[in-house]
Amino acid sequence: MSWSEHAIWWHVYPLGAVGAPIRTPDDSPEPHRLRKLLPWLDHVQLLGTNGLLLGPVFASSSHGYDTTDHFRVDPRLGDDDDLAALCAAAHERGLRVLLDGVFNHVGAEHPLVTQVLAEGPDGPRAGWLRVDWEHPDGPRTADFEGHRALVALNHDSPEVAAYVADVMSHWLDRGADGWRLDAAYALPAEFWAHVLPAVRERHPDAWVVGEVIHGDYAQVVAASGMDSVTQYELWKAMWSSLVDRNFWELDHALRRHDDLLATFVPQTFVGNHDVTRIATQVGPRAAVLALVVLMTVAGVPSVYYGDELGWTALKEEREGGDDAVRPALPASPDDLGDDERHVLHVHQALIALRRRHPWLHTARTTTGELTNTRYRYTSTSADGAHRLHVELDVTDAPRAVVRDSHGQVLFTA
Image 1 (cartoon, rainbow, N blue to C red):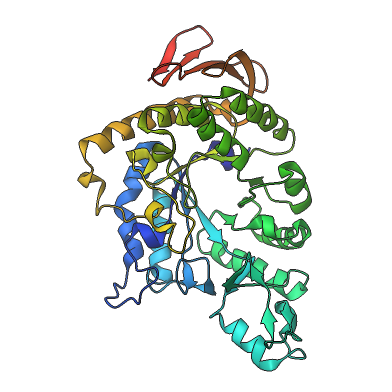
Image 2 (cartoon, rainbow, N blue to C red):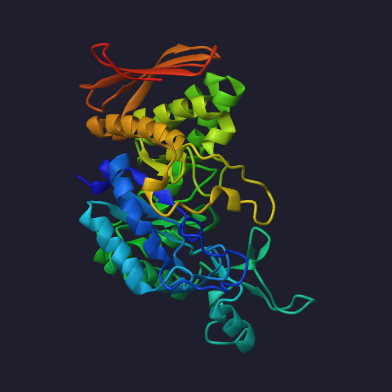
């Protein structure tokens, strides 16, 4: 049995959470900002989650996804000792640690980019990048989705595969328990099929989840060797069913979600660092219904920091449009307000329900009643021995009830 079968992640974006500057110079550098997360580890425990999913922590030029050194902690966050201290403190509390690996591309300021362009097409590392050496404006590197500051690596290169395996193993050696692979959808699955066996030879228990938005999730997992991928299809159905008052979409997504379980267990979520917060998307009362679904269907769930406090924020499609959903945390959980604590208690109740029913990790769902505004489904353990009955209703005010197999109410909102 893998430890990931019991994992429930608290997902945090470190640069934002500790108040590091993102797009401006660090004029007042604080040497150990990453340690600002230490007071929040008890919060992670009290929430009921048992894993710390960290956004980017490695040296970068701005938002963390433009890496300039995979082997160095971002100076805005601190140094290797700060990351080691955070991992050690997490492990002391029984929390696993997942790191965010950006391996599709590097930042334009990465020394590799300068070296490749300086040495030319016959240089010793020319094969690490995809470069149009004949471009009329001069050598032009391939980029990630049109972002010139993000230079795409050449994933056909054995040297790149070996490098990525070295980075992953390096930080697993130093206390990480697994990896989130950023933009995994942009890399060929075969690349990971070369990388991951080398990593697992040294770290067989490491858990690896890829960021995959669209496509054939099961095929990606099977071809790549990743353990899981992000379940964006279910995420979209959870919030848009509530916004549109159309539970048919959620039911359709859950049917497809069940089919995936024959291959792997998806990583499920209602919020992350790239999307509008659920309380903004559907309103605070309906946000509870989304959380009910998250905690009563199969998956490896994550809670994005601040969602458990009812925070609101809108993601915008512009430069800096993610900043609102990546804010600073208060200095301590002691600084939370009454409204935040109320939402926190709801999350604690539903996460506790999930923890009391670990079979939900691979539960199948069947539909009992389905209309635009009412939805009843049953989650059943893989062996058929356990059941939870869930009722969602947005006919008037949003309402949810969870009952056990005997009809006893376990949660209501």
